[in-house]
Amino acid sequence: MANAFDVVVIGAGTGGYVAAIRAAQLGLTVGVVEKEATLGGTCLNWGCIPTKALLEHAHAFKVIKDAKDWGVSLGDTPIQIEMKQVHARKDKVVKGLTAGVAYLFKKNKIEWIKGTARLLGGGRIDVSGSEPRTLEAREIIVATGSYARSVPGIEIDHQRIISSDDAIHMKSVPKSMVIMGSGAVGVEFGSIFNTFGSDITIIELLPRIVPNEDEAVSAELEKIYRKRKIKVLTGTKVTSAVPGKDSVEITAQKPDGSIETITAEYLLVATGRGPVTSGLGAEEVGLTMQRGYIQVDELFRTSVPGISAVGDCITFEKPGHPQLAHLSSMEGIIAAERIAGKDVRPINYDHVPACTYCDPEIGSVGLTEAEAKERGYDVIVGTFPFGVLGRAKIANEIDGFVKVVADRKYDEVLGVHMIGPRSTELVAEATMALRLECTVEEMIRTIHAHPTMSEAVGEAAHAAHGAAIHM
Image 1 (tube, helix red, strand yellow):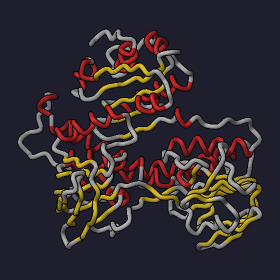
Image 2 (cartoon, helix red, strand yellow):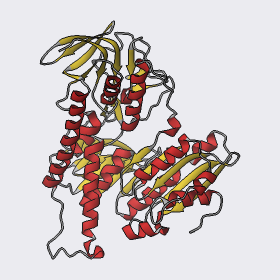
Image 3 (cartoon, rainbow, N blue to C red):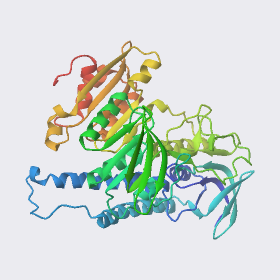
């Protein structure tokens, strides 16, 4: 076991393990410090992958419940979800992917150092655990990620007041659940358990759900959720949550000042994630911090030479940084390539796609209509509904639309926002369009195969020029 490396990465999540692999590919000796029993971090073990596995089961359950519409006879046996089997399959998927990362470490000769890291300065790292070591590195990449956090006054007890980490392991389908927060985590679990049969209430402090999305997308999702008997309370603040033996009593203040009390089996706190930097020794070695986040420049260099940071634990001089697995991976690649002497360029954060895997799915990239207007653009917009498409009707997934936001002067596409079937896949076309500074006219002249869901993207571009064919 070596104690000296060209690069030591702290954390083996989607930012850290990708940075390690890229650095090793470029000929650097790499060690990765990871305290968990498996590689892959939050995304592979407790976040993206297990959650999306549950969502896929929910989708399958939804289709099976409509079996008669598909000409499938299941007899008279009541259809129910078997959570034990759901978790078995979910865990099998997770295990396969984490094992895959371990294989990639061996293939690329990356040493996994099991333990907890603390920065000592001067390129040295103390590793505590079953085999304490002191490592030396020419360059260090901090990729410690984030954790599910609550808000003041609401304590997660992991019994009745739970986090997303708890929700992915629920052994039975709850009769009722209140979800605090309507970002990606909140609306995804709302979809999962609503489909499984739970009575769901979503409480959002801001005026609309999925508040980072285009306003039209927020309105559409709320309309669909209400149709599915998901109760949505916006502009509402949870003021207290008192857990009992079999339930939790939630008190919420509504926009008009009135108080509503809701009793549910569980309260899922989905109000965001905080940086994992406590105990890292960041302040002691001189890293500039903001509210626990590590401040970096556009190429992920910290205030201390030889230390970089990527992913959910970072912020820029102007606060705010999207916490997305795919973004962390790209940041890890750029940091590794810069350290290896490659010519690298900063990320354009306007071109980072966001995906929310609720039902229906949400995919977005670029500026919303409101953001484009705030930046001074003369905006044109084109919208096209999925429900018109033959492919959507065939799949019986007719909710939602695609919205194209563009600049009237140069016809440049500024943003694409969609809610509906396969939106998390369709957004890739829009991301490439923004990357290549595509115009609406170029999107119109791009032939979209028929019958596909992607036709909605082309038709939305037509609509931006007032020339949608099928509407």
